[in-house]
Image: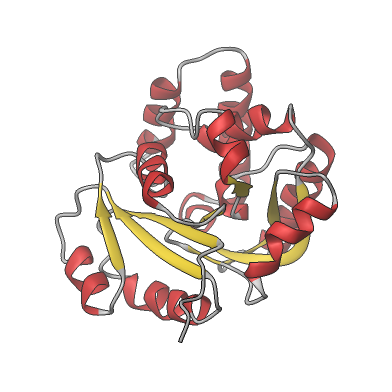
Length: 239
C-alpha cells in the first residue's frame, strides 16, 4: 500500500502540560486521522511527565530550548508538510478537512491565514471578546496565536520563521506575512481557553492586552512586555 504523502504539519509547542495533555492528545488523534497530516509536539523542557504521556500515546515529540517561538521554529524545521499549522496547547482546531487549506490559499493567491476563535470560559463577556478579536483581525490583517495560524512553508521561510522574542511573536510574524499577502480569515472556529479572562477579570485582561500591544508598537522590548504580562498579581500564566 502506498504511503500517503505528508502535506500538512501541525506543530504544537508544550511545556509542563501533563494536567491538560490527555484532552489535547485526544483532539490531536482525531485530527491526525486525516490523510496527509502529521502532528509534531515540541517540548521546551517540561519538568512533569508531559513528554512520556505524549510518546506513550504514539505522538512524535521533539526537544527544544524553551520559548514558544523557538519551539515552533524547531517543529517547523523538522516538519515534512508544505503547509504548517501552529496550535497552542490550550487551543483546539476546528474539526474540518485541514488537508484542503493549502488549496484554499493557492486558489486565492494567499500564503497564510487563521481561523476565527471562540473562547471557552465562565465570563459572559467572552463571546463579545471573541467577536471583537475576529473582527479586529479581519480589519487589520493581524492574527494571534489563539487563532491557529497556518502558513505555507515557503512563506514561513521567506519571513525567517517566528521572531525569537518572548512575547508578541504572533503579532510580528503576522505583520511580516501581511507584506506578502492578506491572511485567509476562515470563519470555522478554533476553541481556546478563557482562563486568563476568568482568573484576572475580563475587562482588566482586555485593558492589559491593549496596553501591552500599544507598548509593543511604540517599541518596548518583548522581554519587558513578557515580564509585565506574567507579573500582574502572579495570575497571568497563559503564554
